[in-house]
Image (tube, rainbow, N blue to C red; front, side, top):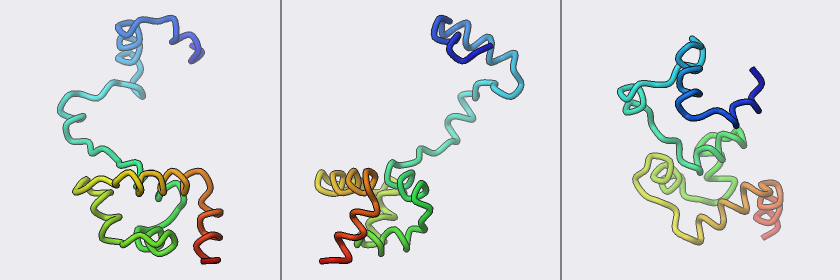
Length: 101
């Protein structure tokens, strides 16, 4: 079945199809409860292939602040969110700008 065919299927039909496929079975409520949500900042860091220390140093963010964001202890404020969006859009530009400053 082509993925585009799923657009026409109801949620119930998709769920039934997933139950039949051993590689695509839906997670149970217990499995979902054990999963941890990955923060956008961690996703960005992983996409860039950087450790916490490397990301923090490269983009001049205190490593403790980065850890707090990634471990759901705190959320980036609006300015930090904007900065992270710029990093996501063009990390190399940010690196050059910081190096030139």
